[in-house]
Image (cartoon, rainbow, N blue to C red; front, side, top):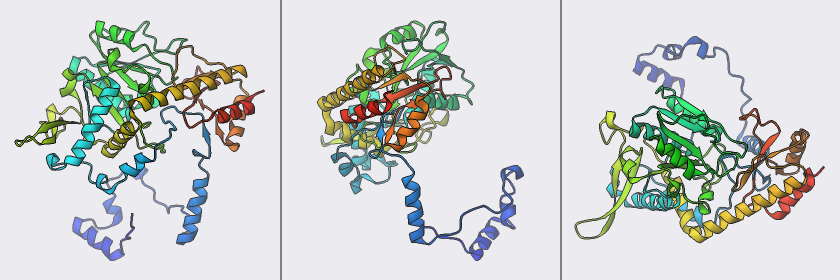
Length: 442
């Protein structure tokens, strides 16, 4: 972004135009305790080449793949992205304005979203999928609001085995509404524990599978429990690749499916970008936030794509709008569609199986050196191990050797001290895993 500083004359004219006598007067509406009166303590200005070198040195302090062997996931996963994906996704014709305000003249954009919706619906086992959301956490929070609108009930039950960041977003979303959130614990097997949880007045039961511990939840059982109580089952996920080998949430009775699609061709970034995937049964279509793209024919029989349903404020009455999310991650959805089409259903299944096999090998290897799995439930490509206290310092030393060995989860689960969440994807070789075991072996 180019930087054009304002001159004193520029500032003076702007202040005069808006009727402010000074900069202090302009900011007088900000409480004094939120303002800094002193000078900002900044480094001296640098010339361009010195600034480049400084930024390069700062970047080298980051530990990133492929220089670092990543044995962590926890919501962001290291996957190989086929070269065809960025080659197609970065074509200039795709990098246009994301929102088609006159949608029917944006046939390319509409077709891209339609293709994404179709592929995602098949994968998630639902009838309809929205044009995507910011990330998996916002998609999950929106899905709970859907359940509240549909059932007329106000309380939601959320599994404590859902990603902690996702649960934080849910609390942020629902706090202004006053809708209570009840958290269900987890069993020694690592799955959601509904014992003692009353679902009779709940709008939804939200469960993640594979959950934050990597364990695969029995969604069919939870669907029965939710439906018997008049609630909806919301199934979430952070590792979309697991859908390549696991039964789809929709086929197991989930009414709404919401999760993160970063694994589908999107590189890892510090906080983003993500891809919020959200779909539901047909009878819930009018409670879906965002927009839906459909395929039709014109008067001459030529195929075309249309904005079929949009429940945002500018399309319908504000009080009838179902969401305050008006934007979708159009380019991320396009990238995911290219990825899924490139890999294909057989390739996705094979890749998912490879992930699971490598994680199983890693888990078994860690167990042989005294770091057993904490939970016994089946897992996909993540699992929690219990480590001796000395592993904390070993893990720091491993960073210098190019290994990021597991994520300590005590911060989110104080009762799980000395427990680490490990992950293995196709980007790790057997040599990588054997090297890690050799480094950790007592």
